[in-house]
Length: 457
Image (cartoon, rainbow, N blue to C red):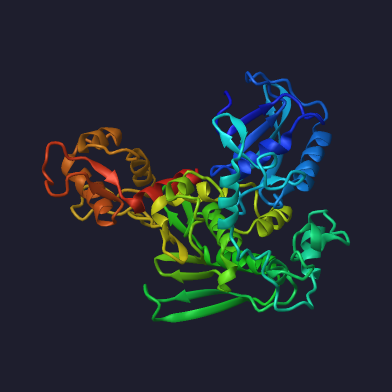
């Protein structure tokens, strides 16, 4: 593995190494990047002797020597490579460009950009243009309409992780404006606020028949997040299928993707709209809607490729501290792995994630006779095996052979027709059902089911 536009190697961290320059360049780069300490320029692993001290130095230098604050935009972790300990620094693209070395300010000596495999000084014209475009409605700059805030809940969550909030935590966690007043981040994390998160449940496929409306809020956003996760965990019922061979259990929604979708909505919601995310349960799906569009510098293709630009880096940093978020940029790939790009919908003001309910078909509580009286109905194990086999388009003959079947008519009636009817499979040539080139491929629902089956293996 060699250096690229997103990967930088450093043999060791020394006082002479301008690590801030490399970090600034990745913060200003639209895709962010990775810095590895303990690897030579040629890619040879040399390792890091004192990992803890090196990680501490890195965090301290990034925290104090770069502006605007990069807290919440980087991860530092120990990794193993070729039998040695190395350090991986993950840096997200920042939303408050241009970033610069504080000592030199917004000048070419302070601001850098990634060009190929190196960090180059940013031209002054580009620095001025980026500064003019910088987001002005950041919740860090918005003054809270209440200044009588307390943070006992926040202290408890930090204490649970054996972390202590010192007397300067309001400044350290960026809960204050430049003028020293509580900002909107503080308001969201305070013990009492006017922010309410709703989880609604409908008996109809539209929003006409509301049967349940739960409200979690007026408290720390972290507490509200945990309450929503607990409620959806209860709603995420496990359906059991009894076959002659085994009992198969499948939740309504993929558990990993569900958690990531909730956290993503909470952390990346545009609270400057003063509109919280909402969660709506329908008989066939869960919809999670958050305010705000994609950041201007992030395309949909980049978004789906896992490139992360945290909208609210202050919230991201705190959610990572209390271990609600594992690492930068990990949430969206986990959602995509289970449900694909189709579950996302973007508008000018909102982003919606739709998680369809997993569907099990062709199951029965015990063996039964086929209507023609010749063979028992298929069990779920065989159907699941066929679904996974159809990860790529398959011909009828390929499926017949894979399932070790000889009776084409019964196979079609027993497997193909039910899967087509359930919208799990679709024909590649639906306008020519008897085409000699006809194949069968998974629908969006089939892909989601296949991914859920693989995740539950």
